[in-house]
Image 1 (cartoon, rainbow, N blue to C red):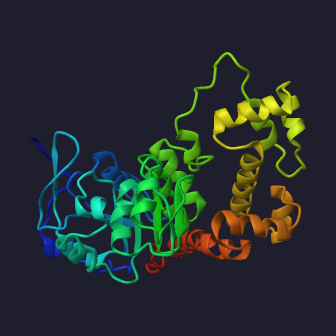
Image 2: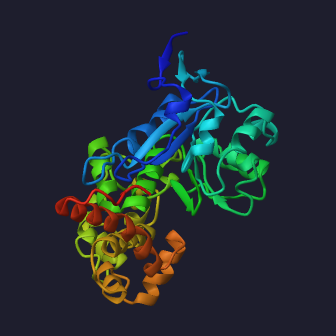
Length: 368
């Protein structure tokens, strides 16, 4: 079986040093835990997404390391090759963020919800201040460690029922692409890991940085809908009329009241036919889709403008700040003011770095 190195293998002592550079810059360290049976695609997602962002001086905002629960060496994938992982579990002790990708050889974790001794020892090294995330079935590791008790989480829709049955203390949501529960984040399967990692970049450094990463990676910065649109259902008949024109029409006037009958009329359909066709194409109802678009519009305005909360609510089509607050709380778990404070911080750090560069100041790290 061929061995494919995941990255160069420097000596552990030098590679795990996290001292800031002479100008005070220290990238946010992301450590990816590679377990036997891992899926190569999911392993590559954090490296691809977090390896892109740079500050205004071209310095990396993140440093990505890969580690195993064992000393450096080969780790099996679910394909016909292994990867050489250059770090052992000691790397987890240096992490600002830990990511557990999907794997198919979880053994007692998947069968009984129990950690192996070496996995428990590795997870015990994670600093209490670190952010922890999982992609797809990596969530089983977090659940078995008790990290998700009383918390909301997600995984691939095909595994959601088993996850809930094995870990009844976890609030499993099978219909979303990812869940952000503060210091613990979980995603659905495969490409949803990209959505999750872009979300973390956005949370750390704002929409502009995340959007740049998305463009470089040739993926959308945000995907509509949830996992419901990927669950097997009859394929829409391509000969039938689409609802895409109505969606484009609605996106151009989110600030206005939009009635379902008006969207249906754009496609010359009855409300009943339009609603059925809309669900077939998007996986959600027109009302759910419209609310999500308005939430995204509100997020963008809160991140990138100085508009008041009342003005954002009107521009996004919620009408009142109270209505927008309720919808953001339901969708994101935060108020508009808290969201702005959190997500504007990254953008402001970028502006500070640019100002320092223009003044010739050599301090002021942009990394988290």
